[in-house]
Image 1 (spheres, rainbow, N blue to C red):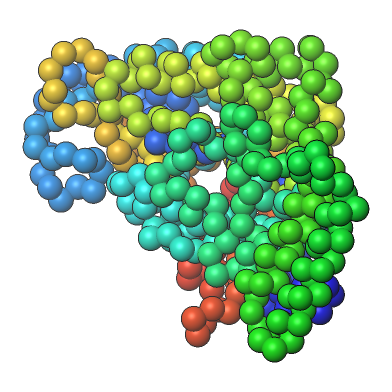
Image 2 (cartoon, one colour; image 1 turned 90 degrees about the vertical axis):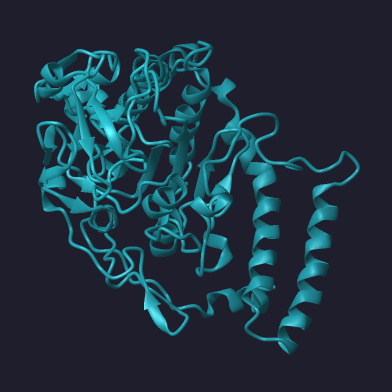
Length: 439
């Protein structure tokens, strides 16, 4: 067994983490579909006077799915200043407002694509075209695992996977053991988690030993076949997970008060509340990177109804997650990220009616961080008066990725993997740490 699994270790070893890094784990809250910064955390009073004013956009502006006649759309939500930091929040973020001072808002990020699949790939993997390792894979490659009985990278998706599918949490050209492990939101979180009644642990252990002997013989004849080593490693992990996973996923171990805080049991918040509570439990057990999906925020029409429902579903669970992590002494070592794949425009096409929505916008978006050494209680960067383009503190998503790695003690320029004739990295070709996001 040792000789077989050693084949998977032939890949270049990642560098040691930088000393003094405060973040050890990541909880990545992915709002798939593109939440509107203008209707969540970046108020634009100028849109009040421009509401429904028509204008013509040429085809040169990379900002929306349509050109031609447009009209400006004000936000249907009133904004408030939350916390001692005075963070801007739409008033329907009533729970998140209570932990505003733990959050660092970043309004300067931009991406390259107006299309969901390519933008999701870029936010998750650094590459618009898929096939590269997800950021969770890079982090587990760089830092390793804290619990060898659980995957280092766990994904909590919706029933319907995001556009681009499982490639959003794939291992790319890294060894297969670094790919994300999705847990099903309904039914058994992992298929075949429990063995059949007639199969004992002793029988399983003997079967794995036999497989290891056969595969080791094959590996001796065909050295360098990392896929075989990865498969055996997965078999071994699956065997250990049968003992570990059921307890970790059992939310009945939590108090009624804790489940109530996360919104478990409330139809509006139950689904995402369970994900947030499970994310905290996974981090407690040493899972390095947990990514939660919630969608779809693709509100081309009726931004008030659509975003109102979406915010109501995640507001209470996210606030509970931050508060719970803080009370347990985990927030300082856990970096929490909230983002979508892009922002939205201050205008919409002339479609008639009053169900105003917004189009895709790669030039401006709001991302926020909490914990893990981020610059809590501050808002970094700014967009223009309409929210169309980042104008202060502007940084590309590759710089944001480099900054996340830096908070974890990883250097994007040395966290590389040799593939297809060159050393590759998450940022593709380098980036700059956004110092203002770091405390």
